[in-house]
Length: 169
Image (tube, rainbow, N blue to C red; front, top):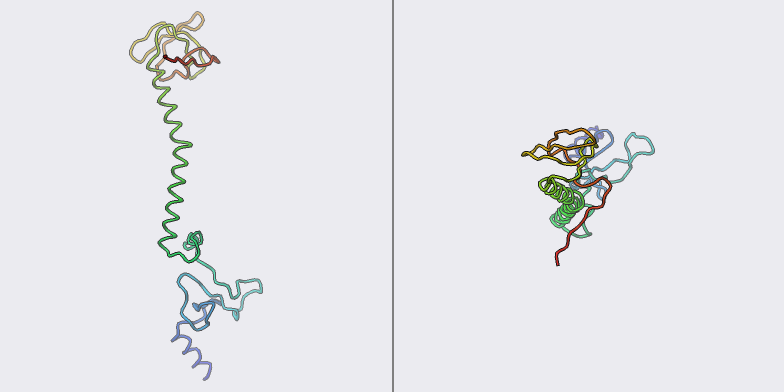
């Protein structure tokens, strides 16, 4: 009878054991649970190497550990958003922006191709431009003339030749 009354009292408090885990806080056995924490009961029938008596944070609350001690949740969220913004900025300036600038320079070089320029195609064919019509280039390579599309030019100038820069004084 006493055990039945004890069970009824526990149910009324909301601390009915479920698989060895109760919803009590780690500091006060009869207190309501702290938000997001699970108290592991030491009297449960679990192996000796379990999480006895420890409060384990849920995964969605782990990012709050980055916040300074004593800070509110909004401060932790602000720090998290600043870190994510810095990460995006670093990725943009180290990876995306240089690639866009390189593509812009390449498009400019393709638009400036003229008769007599040495070119290298994406297939590795080296030749001299002999005729230009819209986006088609006629290239002489050895004794053969081939027609290629302007977009398929990989390099303007002789292969392995350093690019020349012009300076105006």
